[in-house]
Image (cartoon, rainbow, N blue to C red; front, side, top):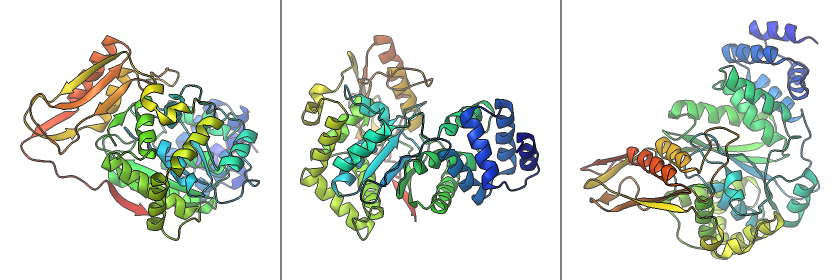
Length: 436
């Protein structure tokens, strides 16, 4: 098989076979196909598209380009969740232990933050000593013992994705829908899961701002997941303003711990948490309906079993379990802080999510480049959200950073995200659609 022939075939718009797609995925993983030929194939795929069969074939081939997790020794349904990214979206931190407490096995493979969106791994690592770089045999051992493990992608899992992802960025083919689908689902297929709940965002703070292309992505993910034998549901959620009241790694983790401990959480955050939990519990076979799953999720928080599941995970993955009982004391703190006050009277009509996300990056909570380090104590705690009535001097939020210049830059950017008006804004539905 020659890559030149495969390039010509895709350039001509012909459908590729599973064996041909496997040849490309293995060539990317092993370095046997030059970058310039892989980039040419990506561009041909961008221009001519991939059929649903090709997308599923590429996804499977990328997943099998390395070692696949073997969870056959772990009894029960294995369900994961994927979010397309947002601002203040630390839901996974609370979600995984809630679902595991309801009897579903949760192997949750997550990523790091880049650009204006946060990453679950960074939020977990805000707990000093928490190990996300787990070996496959340890993941299996932990899942058998606890039903829950939250970890990062290893070099052995879907290695072709790392190469193709970098080349997509360099060849202007990032937006190709089938390539996005294959990138997301190859890592999930490599996890050996039976169910997947996808939180697909739309709005100013989302990867895809408009609802229509976001929905198209959700449908494409659903179709491909089903072709791969993974039960799947997509939840379409709005991301025009930050979710919850915490933005930043340690800050968001603290918020989730407190919710698991029974504290009343932000209404929007809790709503997304409950809906995603309900569907994961349903797909995991522990509830007849998603609504019943939501009831079980609430009960797991109320009786303390979700918090205990979280405590167990923290212990297994090397962090100090005292953080579970007193996150305010044991989570990292930034040296500098500044209160952000309302400048006008009326209603807060906007808090533009993308700008707030980049403001948190300016504080040190996020990355401008993949190799950047993050400040686990940096970020914002909000005291007001769009729709709240304010007067000059009222507290909108507090910013945290480890240097005065970063604090000043982050606050200035955050303030530019705000808008005021004489009337309360019309709120769009937080959850617009659930695609089954």
